[in-house]
Amino acid sequence: MTETTPLLAPKPLYLQVAELVRQRIYQRELQSGDWIDEMKLAEEFGISRTPLREALKVLAAEGLVTMKPRRGAYVTETSEKDMRDVYHLLALLESDAAATVAQQASDTQLQQLHALHQSLCAAVDDANRFFQINEAFHLQLLTLCDNRFLLQTVTDLRKVMKLNRHQSLFKQGRTQDSLQEHEALMQQLLARNAQGSRQAMLTHFSNGLQAAKMS
Image (cartoon, rainbow, N blue to C red):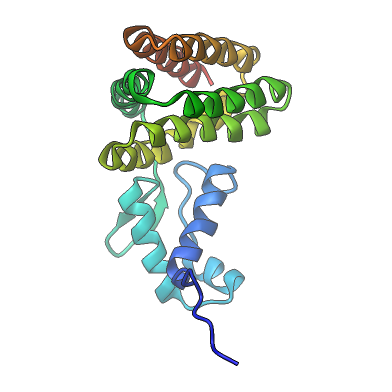
């Protein structure tokens, strides 16, 4: 019998802990401004405070938590200006990605993106599922753009945006409006209209920012 080497090494403990805390932030179990009780979390996770502190450094680098010397860490509070800045950058980057995909994606790739859009349509009455598929759609579009630097930058910015974004989708009518914006974008992508795709994505983010401000 020969030994087999695992294809994927398990994530280091501190990264697993970072994901657990990240999800608590996204799910509002830890809300903006909340101080993180390191002792309580370490006890709950059954770990020492060392991997927890390393996890908090990861989340601080993502902008999700803010660390204060000798005081600990708290969930980052985002001002209206912060959200405007994040949405502004995302609009520029993702609209550029949409224009690139309209020009360069294969027919098969565009059909795969369209299939995600159809799943989004089917989830319009389920805000949680709509949110998940919406994230997958944007990630797939960015992947098709085939620019790893753009993808990493947008991924980091979206982590900050999610401090507010999920709640904005629960705003009455926002899922329908977002779906219509996706429909307009998808039409431009399928028509391979680069400028139309760029503008559709810019409109999508502009409307998303207004919803986030009002949520």
